[in-house]
Amino acid sequence: MARQGKKVLLIDADPQGSLTASLGYVEPDDIGTTLATIMMGVINDEEIGEEEGILHHKEQIDLLPANIELSALEVTMSNVMSRELIMKEYIDTMRSRYDYILIDCMPSLGMMTINALVASDMVLIPVQAAYLPVKGLQQLITGLFLW
Figure (cartoon, rainbow, N blue to C red):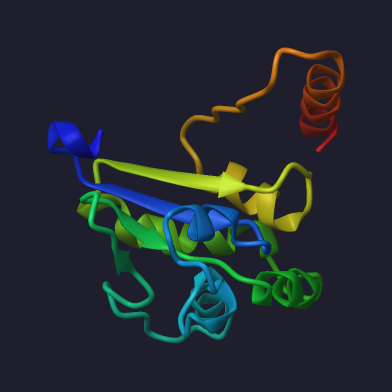
């Protein structure tokens, strides 16, 4: 997408920071402003600068990184009203700046993944063509319909 001239924002919504690390940021825990920082700002109704937390990668993509702070945020969110809308509120402010916003989630149906689903227009779930991954996908889809 970026190679075709599109503006792309990647959001790492995995507390392990897998996407962040795979883009070369090998110490995600040393990054100052992350998705957790931004979402905490939304919860506290703080003003968030349009470039705040965004890392510009050499491959012409932008990244909102994640680290272990996201795990603590998920606990905090359990006491927040409309907690499933926190990420959406932030992403809605970014939509006009990007052609595509992709959110990388961990393989669970926790509050962070629910936030990503609520904020999304479409969902793409990559799965290995093997029994256990497909079984996990079936469980995820069942969980979505129950939610």
